[in-house]
Length: 258
Ligand code: DAK
Image 1: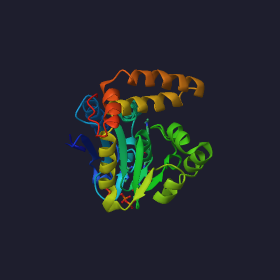
Image 2: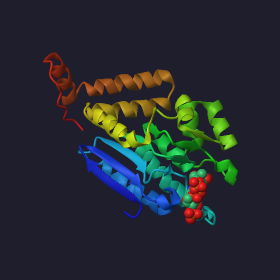
Image 3: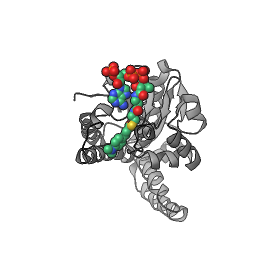
Image 4: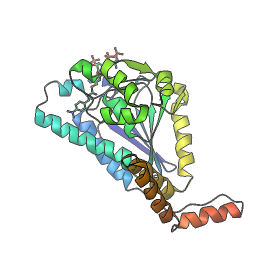
């Protein structure tokens, strides 16, 4: 891969978008590689959680690559959109938990890719924003949909209409990020969180992720019915037997389903 780094250790995959000279902006090649990389990880039983970050200390992802977009034709725009749809969809729906380690600018497509992850942790220098209307376009990698679901309609509209950047503390205050840590501690914090998640029943984590995601697209009554059915499903797993037996025997559980 020309634009990504992948490292797998202790059941955790770290995917780094590696174009630091352009602040890790997303071009067609990067999105293609990301989709393929995530498709591979999705199938791996030895990877229980994934951390997505950007190379360098300045930027997570400074958006879509403007130099590529400036002369793009409608057909190229559509291809670009489909590549992002696939890669972002994988992050959102893959069985593994996904954590965005936001180590600097998360603008436009950068903010949007972080929102396709399950959890966002930001370093103190991180900046979030949706600058698209300043470029004469609208957020096109899910920003109008995911931002409003995460922080509410009024705040999403303010961020998108004003194209203002906000700092990490403000992002935390409005619920866009789960946690803010000093930059030097960012990857360590995310790894610890990933290891904690990986130590639980991974099949149960994947089912919980599915229930949350699918439930948000339903009314609450149907969401609760879905939850009941999925809880029933977890009662058929070896992990459920092991988790409960381990509790009663006062020992740590050894989960095997995934
Ligand atoms: N694309 C391309 N190059 C970028 C870039 C980007 N998004 N962001 C930064 N760079 C490049 C700069 O051009 C510069 O390159 P050189 O001049 O050194 O060759 C280098 O990275 C360093 O950037 P700066 O010199 O500008 O660094 P500063 O610290 O001064 O400023 C900044 C950092 C992040 C505030 C600034 O670079 C900036 O405003 N960047 C652009 C942010 C932005 O507007 N991002 C794009 C948002 S729009 C679509 C779907 C979705 C989208 C589009 C289409 N379809 C479905 C078709 C999404 C669009 C977006 O994401």
